[in-house]
Length: 378
Image (tube, rainbow, N blue to C red; front, side):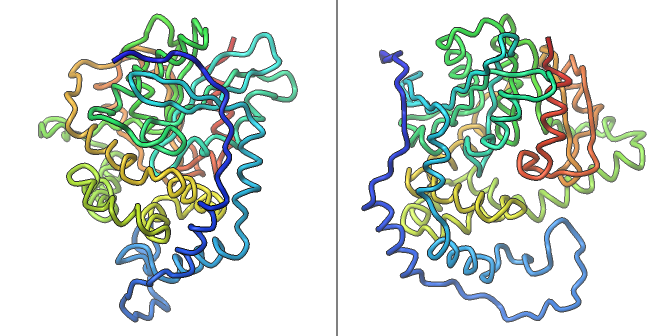
């Protein structure tokens, strides 16, 4: 397969007919039923409220759907996103959409930022100004914010195999096309899978990797669990709780993503509800804008396939060696350093913060920007 390597300007311009269809579908939503349970006085025993015991509650979905219909303004978000330079190019047979915002600072460092699921490149929009146009002489960055193939404006994937490794290879090619000889890589969620692999395959050009999670888990060897501190045991218990109570989306998307795909392609309310479990800690506008992007691009199915492809990939056994930094936020699961050092042989920075969540760009952007500047500096 030959690639068209041209980089073309891109502008979001959704036909009004698509927005009218979205509105029509929202007004005709058939609501799910749920149990009538009085949660008054219920005690929260985990990271999710009691009323989310069975999953995303009807009250939440109805409230956001009403907001989607009455006060949410996609055109305003379209205008805001279009305020930043966007482009598309073809890499490995797949359209890749990306923001490319260069700083006016001649000493700016190129930095590629990779989003997670169920986010999109929208995840980093609030970081563009502080990173490209900092105050007080702080380090500035040229930002490349791509959309993972299968997500949002990169459009649905066209063939098998779009796992973390293929995405990382696409990012290396993208940075080469943009003329960046040396650059840093950051990722969150799925991006925390991709960024270390970008460092693994392109060490001649990647100056370092910064992530908000290191997905390093016990291998099953009982010896690994010997002599754990009380704090480490607490981390493992939280991870176990998360897997047992909030891992349904991951299991389904790893095993049979197409089972859900038909519903997501047919119901915008269903698309909203599916991504809400993980995004609900973010502001309503952020949740709705992501839901709108997934709906308008019909990428609910292909974004879910990322989990399937990654689960069925052949994973390297050797640790990464590129300089690696972790910024771990309070309301997110934290890796045990002993396991992280097993998988990443060159950890140069490890910071655990007392606030922020899995989506630190939304609730702790100052800490994230601060940590990035501590790692990627001239």
